[in-house]
Length: 188
Ligand SMILES: NC(=O)c1ccc[n+]([C@@H]2O[C@H](COP(=O)([O-])OP(=O)(O)OC[C@H]3O[C@@H](n4cnc5c(N)ncnc54)[C@H](OP(=O)(O)O)[C@@H]3O)[C@@H](O)[C@H]2O)c1
Image (cartoon, rainbow, N blue to C red; front, side, top):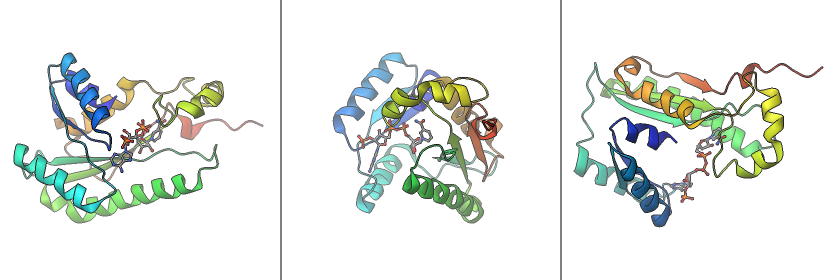
């Protein structure tokens, strides 16, 4: 969803996951849309040597150290609103850690002309959410104040804002993109 938003707005996007086939296929589909360019760069980011390899690959092509004080490089971590609707304890702990880590990164590394922000999505229709939405689709619509799950444009637009001139001074923020899920009215 996010990659498509960047591609249709002309950006170059590196597509990465563990599956070579999935990366190649998505890059092909996105390049057919244009006008941006998608490049398949598979990696297993659980492994440190793979993280280093992907950095080297991107540096070779882009010169990563291109951020300036007025137009910094942008890191967007994807956390979650993760309201306690489901018993996903490890997921909740890892998302809270990511939100906190992002603030620490912003405080310590922004002097290198990089911003760090988190987006906390509500429910979106992805591979991860397929089973949950199959069972709880109506439940989400009842609880979320806007009465729907997120659309691709909702999440892509927020990422484009953070990476654009408009987002250059937003640093250490956690932006909920959840239709008001966090403010949902409790059932009495
Ligand atoms: N969808 C939602 O409603 C929702 C709500 C809140 C937060 N989020 C967050 O949004 C993010 C994206 O999730 P999604 O919903 O888009 O789920 P998804 O469709 O399952 O996507 C997760 C992606 O991560 C890749 N991946 C997993 N382990 C990897 C590894 N070790 N190295 C490299 N890539 C790896 C997977 O590809 P491979 O299996 O090919 O590696 C897959 O493409 C997650 O952090 C999720 O917690 C999603």
